[in-house]
Amino acid sequence: MNTTTEPAPRMRIVIDPTTGEPPYEQVRRQVAAQAADGTLGPGARIPTVRALADSLGLAVNTVAKAYRVLESEGVVETLGRRGTFIKPRDLESDAAQQAGAAADAYVAQLRRLGLARSEAVRMVEDRWR
Image (cartoon, rainbow, N blue to C red; front, side, top):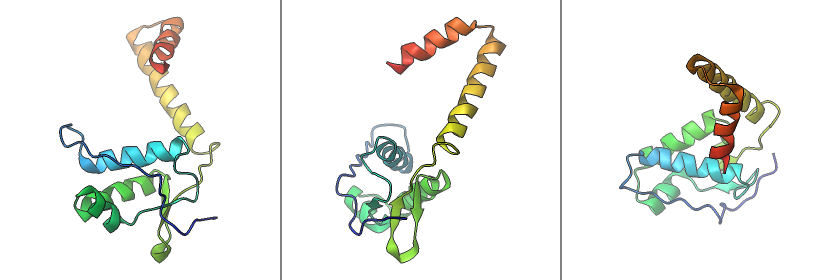
């Protein structure tokens, strides 16, 4: 894997204590979104658990939990003392499989509800905007 040696300077995480979303999930969601939109490119090194926890004012275990979930989702990989890096995504096997599973579940649910295909497509298009 091609990795950089410096932490990703463009990574921006904002924790909103007023939401009902747990802080670890806010970290996980924002890192995953930045990896998905290319803000954090494949191989970008992200801050250590301790450094990110310190900068956000969170407990180390909170950030560690977010990183563990990100690793289990295939978003990041930890390479021991070298650090944690954004993992290159294999769209064929990763995103395509997840998207297919989500589409299968969506279609099955809408069929159970008795909605027509045209209505299901319209709903997706309305929400895509």
